[in-house]
Length: 290
Image (tube, rainbow, N blue to C red):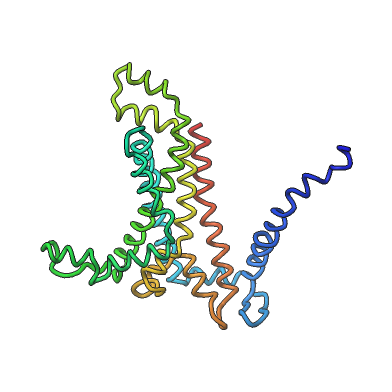
């Protein structure tokens, strides 16, 4: 009977395997092939070798997009690695009414990134609530260009990402904190360690692997950010298009009937390489620390 059912495991994994091949593997291979051509949406294209990759060295928009993506990652990783941990430590305590704060912190995660970005734009534009309140209270004499200055727009998008992601990573940390031994906290308290000392000596080492996982997730998301910058800049990429992310740049070159699919595909390959880099670095760092 067992011999006749040798194919059962293969039947179980077949749907997932077909999905991965059709929607992941084949498009990835096709993108790699297209990156060596000058293909257009309405035409086949011819082989051009590494022309699309050498073109990157003269593309100032690509340089700006890489800088934006790196800044996004460098700012988001520490904030979204540490702040959710602090929130998780606070809301894991069994206090009356603590469930309300857990729900409140997690609620932004449920909202669409596009909807939140639209609300953020309404709050931060020249006539928005933030500038209006600041001017009304006398803190500003003129509105701050949150959405028309390159770096302020980038920081506005980062603040949106951090605000929206706090609850999601807080839940992950709460799960990890449940595995930290209470006996270690009690032993540290008996030895005279205060809350801060116990946090750094017991809690942080206990969730170190979770912190690494979250750092990887945030790095990948930050390098692939799209909705926040796209909506806040109204699809223009900010002043002079200098606030574009790599994904926005790929969309810019690949869209339309006259889009450059070959170059957009090469940028997609670059995005893959750039995304894998932080993952490999963090994995090696974790191995060395272990």
